[in-house]
Length: 535
Image (cartoon, rainbow, N blue to C red; front, side, top):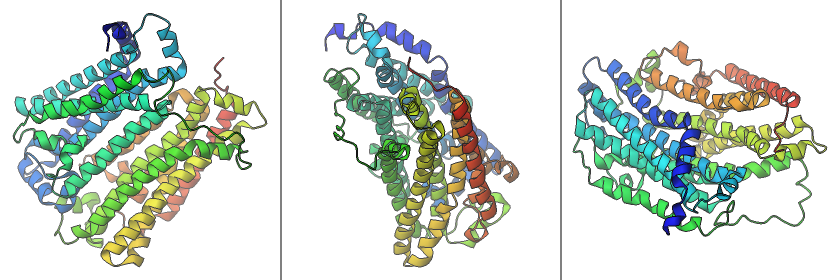
């Protein structure tokens, strides 16, 4: 690398900092807020002392399988044990999106071509994007450490934990930079990063299930805190290894960035056929073609997830009882109605449904991306109505999100039934668990369609609503939120504490009707508003 290859880095850094003056503080401070939320949760639960509460969780086979063994039996240890995966995921996604936004997204919009018309080195844009992301991660790590110190945590352990979270974020910044070089569109680059994050979460869960001390804790960034062990050893030397791991994708991105054309990727796109298939002649066929790669990627991840959980669930049934806190959630001893293996997999399916809801939101937002890139204008200018075009995307998004849940139910039921030797009951019970999650997922799909139809600039509110449902769930589990308040979330109608025989099918069917109504209103809004053009 020559020195003049970095010309203009400082100027671009200032530009990116100005563009991110609202988004950067959001993902830097959000992990701190999540850590404080965990602290408030455990403080509210610890009527008999923090040590006794954490020991109860530590001895609970179900909770220990989900979150791994407790590292330190105090409030800072509770934050590390319960909140590290969420903190790491926020920093990972924030880092990934920031790098992609300032590199590949700018190339797609033509902004990078305009910048390159001035005296700017070939590494300047990439370096500026990485710098702002790394500084954001370091700042977030320091704030996480200071917040734990303010709660009474020791200084060394607090900064070891903060540094671990910072390195996780920097690793995903490198993954985002590498994905940008490989693929020629921002969606694919983000998909690479999200796939790596999803794989990391799966490996973290497997590591927790086998005791939290397997080789997977070194491989998965989401489990690196189990290597550095904040407040239970404070091993800072593994951070050097993790920093070296994080540097690898960064170096790879620098090597590849000069080996591709601006706007192109190292991996070339597959050329299409000279003539379209006769079946490829409708907006629905086009929508499926645009969604299918993302759908199959999600399908692979979701099937891997449920197969792992289904295979491990039966073994928990012989692990003894579970904590009184978990069994008394909702004010009833709901775990006595079924065995522990079913409890474990029902919670796993509930968590997966929240993730599938995120897929449904992104599938609808694919319509917005098509409009932003000017392709919607080309299509609706032909003999294709606006409602026909948008409804085709909504139909594919709804069908694909339902297919993910149904495939998860069939695969999970098959594996669980074979493992327990009760294929008939196991298969149908788990399939019904997944079917019940489709209406809540479609509610978020319909809400996103409503926002896009009328106010495409505020579709981010869909993510805020999704996050609100998750926070309500966490607050309810911590007994800070009453069940009546939790029922704001549509996912409560298919909650894991509700026995399959008592599922409220009429409210669930009502959710389907409401989601269809929201989507229909969104279609009318899109029909009557202006379409974004690139002119």
